[in-house]
Amino acid sequence: MTTAIAVNGAAGRMGRTVIETAAERDGVEVVVGFHATDAGEIGGVPVVGSGEAADALAEYEVDAVVDFSVPEAALSVADACVEAEVPLVVGTTGFDGDSFDALEAASDEIPLLKATNFSRGIQVLLRTVREAVGALDGYDLELMETHHNEKVDAPSGTANTILETIQEERDVEPVYGREGHAPRDDDEIGVFARRAGDVRGEHELVLAGNDEVLNLSHRAEDRGVFAAGALDAAVWLADRGDGWHEFDEVIDAE
Ligand SMILES: NC(=O)C1=CN([C@@H]2O[C@H](COP(=O)(O)OP(=O)(O)OC[C@H]3O[C@@H](n4cnc5c(N)ncnc54)[C@H](OP(=O)(O)O)[C@@H]3O)[C@@H](O)[C@H]2O)C=CC1
Ligand SMILES: O=C(O)C1=N[C@H](C(=O)O)C[C@H](O)C1
Image (cartoon, rainbow, N blue to C red; front, side, top):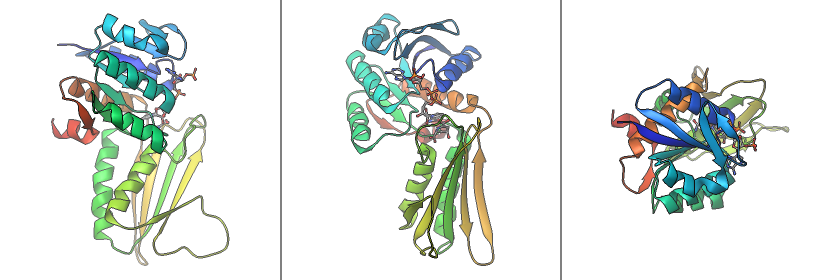
C-alpha cells in the first residue's frame, strides 16, 4: 500500500528534501506540495498556494501531511488538515507558547505528531541525556548547538527539547549566551547557538564533574535523515487515531 503525502513548505530546504527522499523509496508518494504562493512544480510534484490546501487535500486524496515551514504556515495547514480530516506531521520549530497551544488544540480533531528532530540518533541522544543527567548528580551542564546561517530560530528546537528533557530530571535554569563577570551558579545551564555555513545540525551536551567530562553529541550530515524520519512518522500516523503523538512512538512500534 502507498501512503499519499502532501508537503507543506515544499519549496524550502526540507520540503525539497522530503520530495527527493520520498521519490527514492517505496510505500510513499508525495502527491502535492503547498507553498506561500503557487510554485508550479518541484521534483515532478504540483505545488499549489497554501490557501488552496484544504481543497487540494481532498482532491489529491492525501493520507498525511508533512510540514517543514514556519509556525504561522504550520498553523494554517493544521486548519486545513482539521477541515479535510487528514493527519499532520509537524517538523517546524520556533513555536511560541500561543502558537504551540493552537497546534496542540488541533490534535483534538486529527492525529498530529510533532518532533523538533526526526533523526533517530537524536532520539537515542535524548534517552541517553535523561540517563546521564539522572546518574551524574551535581555535574555542571552546558548545551551547544550549531546550524547553517539561514536558520531563523535560536536556540534550535532540538536544543529546547534537550533542555526540557534535562529539566524533567533536574531543576536547572538556562543562561543563554553567557557574558559578564561572575562564576556560574550550580543550578545553571549555559545554552549556546552558533550559526555558520551550511551546517546541517550539531548538538552537544557537556556534563562536567571536577575530575571527568562526559560529552554527548550528535551531528546530522544530510537533511535526508530528517526527511526519512518524517516520512516514517507520516506512514505510521496515517493509521492512528486523533490526538498528540511523539516520534518515540513510531520508533517503539518498529
Ligand atoms: N524536525 C526536524 O527534524 C527538522 C526541523 N526543521 C525545521 O523545519 C523548518 C523549515 O526548515 P527549512 O526547510 O530549513 O527552512 P526554509 O526556510 O528553507 O523552508 C521553509 C519554507 O516554508 C515556506 N513558507 C512560508 N510561508 C509559507 C506558507 N504560508 N505556506 C507554505 N509554505 C510557507 C517558506 O517560503 P519562503 O521562503 O518563500 O518564505 C520556505 O520555503 C524550520 O522550522 C526548521 O527548524 C528543519 C530540519 C529538521
Ligand atoms: O533548521 C534546521 O536546519 C534544523 N532544525 C531543527 C531544530 O531546530 O532543532 C532540527 C535540525 O537540527 C535542523
